[in-house]
Image (tube, rainbow, N blue to C red; front, side, top):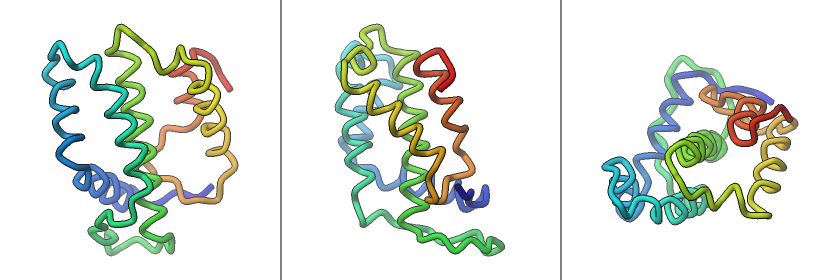
Length: 144
C-alpha cells in the first residue's frame, strides 16, 4: 500500500466532493439541517456516493507541484472518494436512529471484506485514510 502526499490527497478529496451532483447535495442539505426527512435520505445518499466512484469524468485539479507520486488521477480520486464514503458512513452511524445498513445481513459482510482488501492493496491510498482498523473499530466496535 502506498500513500499519496497530503496536498494531492486533499486536492483529490475536494475534486470528488465538487463533482457530486445536485441531487446528492440536496440530500446532504436535508441531513445537515436536521430535517425530519433526513433519516430517509441516508441510504440514497450513500448509494449515490458509491455509484459516483465509477464515474470517469470527475475533474482533477492537478497535483500539488512538489509531489513526485506517479499514481494515476483516476485511482487517486477513487481513493479520496472511499475516504469520503467511509467518513459518511461514520456520520450515518452516529446520527441515525434507524441503522438499517449495518443491521442488514449483506452490508456488514461486504464492508468487512472491503476493509480487509485495503490492507493488502497496491492502489495508492489517500493520506486522509485513517486505516482499516480504525474504520472497522468504529463500525463494529472491535478490531479486525
